[in-house]
Amino acid sequence: MNVFEAIMNRRSIRKFEKTPVDEKLIGLILFSATQAPSSGNVQDWNFIVVMDEEKKKRLARAALDQDFIVDAPINIVVCTDLEKISLRYGERGKKLYSIQNTAAAVQNILLAAHALGLGSVWVGAFDEEEVKTVLELPDNLRPVAILPIGYPAERPKAPDRIPFENLTYVNRFGERYEFEFKNLAAYLREAFKKFAKRKVEKPSKKLTFEEFLRRLAK
Ligand SMILES: Cc1cc2nc3c(=O)[nH]c(=O)nc-3n(C[C@H](O)[C@H](O)[C@H](O)COP(=O)(O)O)c2cc1C
Image 1 (cartoon, rainbow, N blue to C red):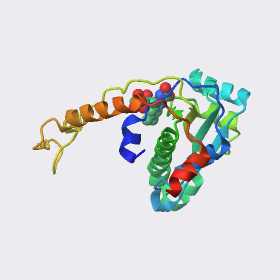
Image 2: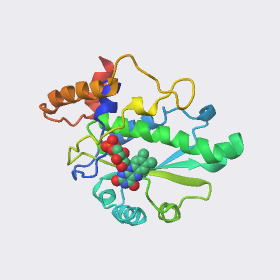
Image 3: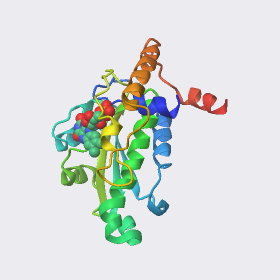
Image 4: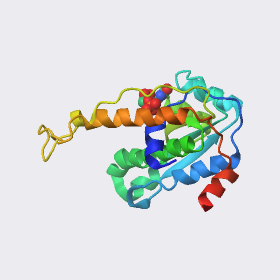
């Protein structure tokens, strides 16, 4: 799977099979997370892997009863270390880079999971204090995202995207970028749709860690 396939075909998955996820795949996903860029390579992220049923229930409760958190075999809670980031970058680090760095790690996790035939969803709606209590986080750790991960039990349609032409300006805000190729976003959307349809015919395959290594070696 190339990077465009991963970007275009990743979807938020909120229904999961009960099939457990190989620990090595979880490691591979976390390894991918740590390859994300971070300000000054500070790597202020911490990851809490939650598998305990009771903890998953408490996490779901802290996240407005989003019960798919319980259904997923594992959840990764991505946290930023506010002490680490502010030591290096002060207020800007604490307010902005902490979120940007962990968001980059989250996106890597979502794409890596997708590339392995797994599904996930970025859960941001939760009571931070409650999550901190459940996970016994020290004061310097701020939970940024809960990521339930498991094999998808649904294949959601791609939600609409605003064409990039409507959101893009040239040289100054307000000056539309007039692409010579009109409606390029719509053209690309259709091209990817056709391509995605072809892929759907193939049975979805669970990629094992061993198969992943074999492909890596090719
Ligand atoms: C910061 C952030 C917070 C989100 N929080 C939630 C959430 O709490 N619950 C949920 O079901 N989806 C959540 N989502 C997922 C979005 O709903 C989803 O990405 C969006 O609808 C686009 O769908 P797609 O991911 O399939 O492209 C969140 C996404 C982001 C980036």
